[in-house]
Amino acid sequence: MKKSIKVSSLLIGFVIGLVLGFVLTNQLKSKSQLSNKQQPSSQLTDIIKWPWADSLDAVKAAPNSHKVLFENDNVRILEVTVDPYGFEPMHTHRYPSVMFGPGNDTSQYDIIYYRYGYDSIMHTYVAKDSVREHGGYQKGKSNEGHFMKPEGPHRIKNLSNVKILAYRIEFKREMKK
Image (tube, rainbow, N blue to C red; front, side, top):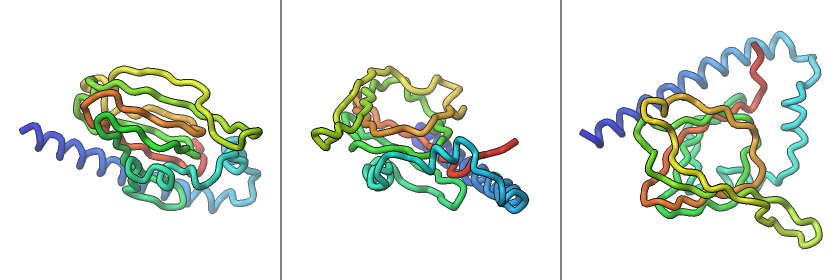
């Protein structure tokens, strides 16, 4: 019973992601055809000026914890996992995104979120700070997305014996109303 709930939650999340990706792609395609000559927005300008190396992209730098489920010119949908007691490699997320859980209770995990900066004198990345967080998504609210701004270099350490699973929909282009 528990396994079938996990599988159905995963399928529901995947279908929601695909539908959202399809709808957003069509919406962006029609809007971009109408406004190809506009100046880039501040959000797109920030993306263009992204200061971190492409090699730090989550899919390249942390491939064991970031799997691409869907990608086109407008969106990228990632499955994000952190094994029990796992420590992700340092990575970035260049695009604004929405992150949500798969629908099961993940309130039993603890993580440490480490932010990194670049030391130009030593030519290396150094941990700037860390934050310990408990839990994940509240029961019954795990399919509600949480908006996330682009993230510079960071790592996550799973302090629990529970595998963490989430989905991240990254928006490669700005969404206009």
